[in-house]
Image 1 (cartoon, rainbow, N blue to C red):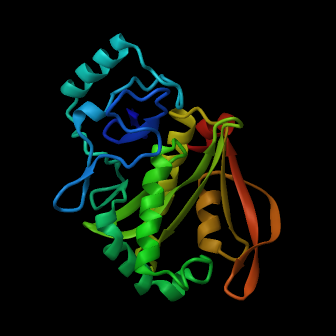
Image 2: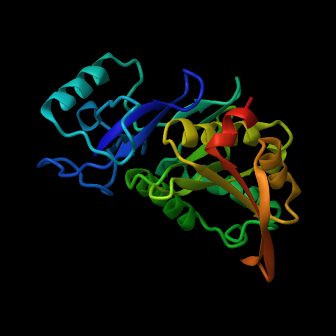
Length: 268
């Protein structure tokens, strides 16, 4: 598996994005295999010899397997100041950062869901019955999603504490489109954290992945979630009637979308 270190938005924000390996060499992990190894603290570590630093101009999904390219990757890896620990990191402000989830985060993430269960269950179909075991599986799935080159999910960390998550549901590389989902603890509402986080992911989708379309779908009565899309300039395109079941009711979703050609103007 080769990885690409790319800029999310400002220069200090970096992401590690998977590039499909056409024919893994003996001893290297195949596509979709677990990333790195678990250290004593439960955190995932990816050794330098498992990572290739590839220029951001290389299109996602296109392997670079020549001996010269690999030598350049290793040279770049040795020179970069970023520690190769499989961590996506983006600083929202002096208090808040986004980073990849790890299995060691499961208990903390579950505690946030449990503390906000009633609040989240209004619009999130999974929240009412979420368990610690299901939270572990969610984190494992998010790591596989990254390995499969289908986007990524990150934790929202405020003052060192996980307070929510956001990420891409999947990436349609053929149609060059994706969608973004998010939630945050009720106590952290109103600070613009999610708006800035969604802006960063949207910019990443257009600027780095060269996608053409990003969607945000939200329950028709979920005004806070819909306000984020509106604030960022996403256009309301229509309503999907009773598209999701939340508890004992069916919820209509409003579809908001942004196109690449519109983003440079909307994001100013």
